Length: 502
Ligand SMILES: [Zn+2]
Image 1 (cartoon, rainbow, N blue to C red):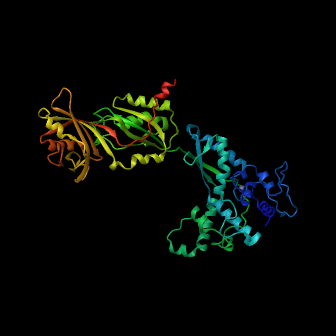
Image 2 (image 1 turned 60 degrees about the vertical axis):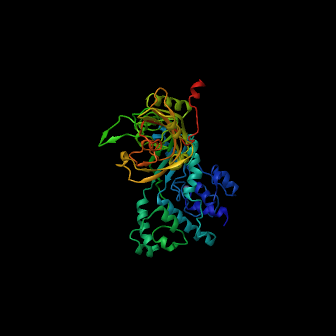
Image 3 (image 1 turned 135 degrees about the vertical axis):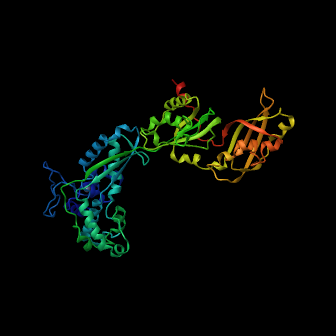
């Protein structure tokens, strides 16, 4: 089978030039200049006359010469008209709202296209015999050709780059004959696969099924032909653009927060349907960052590497956090914008944030895993009934790690099951608070998941040993701060530098 013979046959069946190249198994950039590729393959290029009529290139063309109309295999998908329509459709959608540099096209192709591809497969076998394989399609599949042909063109026209994680443009295509053809396909399916039809309650006719089961090796041409023509007849109507939907990328914004207030909860605190506290760390952060990325900040997911109680501050370098923002209208954040957000959050007087930056989605694993293995760094302000003695101070300088047994504290029993958990305390270091001989400042390093308040006072022996049992007298905790989180993520960025540059 010569290329010229193949192309002549395809032309006689009303196949467009792009699809001719598909059947010549053209690759990548070969679709850019169709005529040149055809010439390189020694194919005579048709001249189009003023009326859009094709002059046959050879004398042995079949008598019924097709008009240069809708391609019988792609139904106009690769035509200039469709490209124009698609581009207009995209520009008329909410496309302008999205400030994204990258896009990805997701075109849902009607099944009628697959049926036509199959009909052409049979037609080629009839014409050229066993040189046309029964298992491997004779063409570059339309789905792949969309990526090779439409993607680059649309990207170029829109001035965007292709990226699978970019703004997703979902294009829904319809064809007038789709329903009718699928009905026929259901009947064909019963005949072609009677065993399956008898043993499965319901067979979903899907694109996947078509791709997998419908090949000349599995369905005979004669069976197919009872329901469909070989090759497919030429139709008047092209594919219709039914709908375009846009889905912005999932953007992840990370940073570290410091909780500088003892009267704010981590997430909205609601008890019996009533707000206990007006605001929360989550809300303050989302309120100041969300609107830059989305019109629906309520869809944002807030995550952090652990959390602290309402009355506990988190100081030092702060706690790593991340926002997962779906369908984002922007995928970038300049240092200047980040700095403004950091300042706006600081103004709350309750939380401050630093190192704000957009991170790759994969990096969220830092926050999601390994929480139990991490070390926690605390500073506790503790009170004794009597002034601190040298002996007490000495007992609270512990540099070797030790284990405690901790029962679930009574204060959290309403939401956590009762267990006794072993926890490791890595170090304890105490000093007397300046100006108050009855108060101790204790730095404690523990395994994640240790209840610190109970570690200090022992909760009537529910935590043993406790700092109180170690010194042999009652000890109370008055204030607690988290002073370090064992996670070097996200990387440090000084967004205020953007302000200095000005
Ligand atoms: Zn075509």
